Image (cartoon, rainbow, N blue to C red; front, top):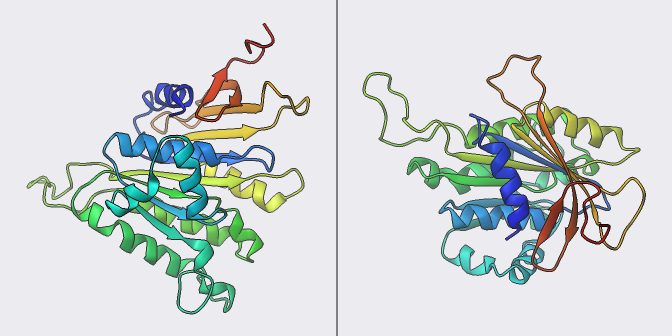
Length: 270
């Protein structure tokens, strides 16, 4: 499943000691990350790690349809308890986590955070590695949530994938022997004239260990090349003056694959 992308990501993550930290995936309106999100889910499940997916833009059924095309039965995985879904599009009223849309409060995303925390709590208590995916947090901006509140929400969610809560702790230090319970993947959207969305992406990128940026071609649409993808890996153990390791690719989306190749080396060009 998206083997080229997985190989490129593993090559970057492997050099980062904080590989269980925050991964940012940014995209534009013409460069959809939906297939990449499903690929992340599939890779996590293949490695034995359950996934909590928080949908804020597309429905759970939409991702199930994409999964079916890629040979991944997400509904079955959900029934088996390997995937938990917080379907934000259905939580728009009453006491649900996104009820703030009807009644704004001082901490608009607190209830949603508590809902996610409850969903992953059993994994944390068992010391089980898991993946938490926040799909398109930029959607909160159009709901009237301030950029600062979204940033705080992301930081709290990152804490959920931090130190596990289980009995395997050092008797001397009292600390858990597992440094992180898993990884947090945050999806954002960037647009040329949307300053809030762009600033939100930039803010989250400052805390990310890995930033996957999907963009359209600067020369316009192409039948053979669907866009460009930039992978930036940050070594958080390096002094602040260190630059990220950056790789640039062109990509082409196929029905069951995402082909990556260096700019100018597309087989159809050569």
